[in-house]
Length: 90
Image (cartoon, rainbow, N blue to C red; front, top):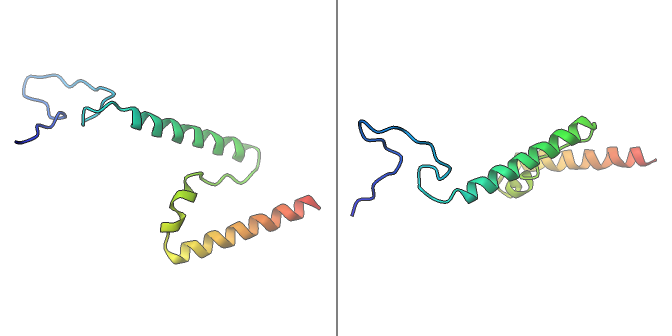
């Protein structure tokens, strides 16, 4: 049995964009991911406008998969952030 792709348009047919996407699924997962990215972007923009450091919330999810030199860089950046915060508290 050959699966027919739903995103191909036969000659003479019109293209209709639907929220289901090319797989014909519900699109709920895509909607939730889009909403999460929108909220995270808004939070980062708000924190940056206040002058705060605004790292990506998703960065923590992928930090374990970074190359070793990136882990050292992130550890250094986190230590620098803690040092700056301790100076502000004085």
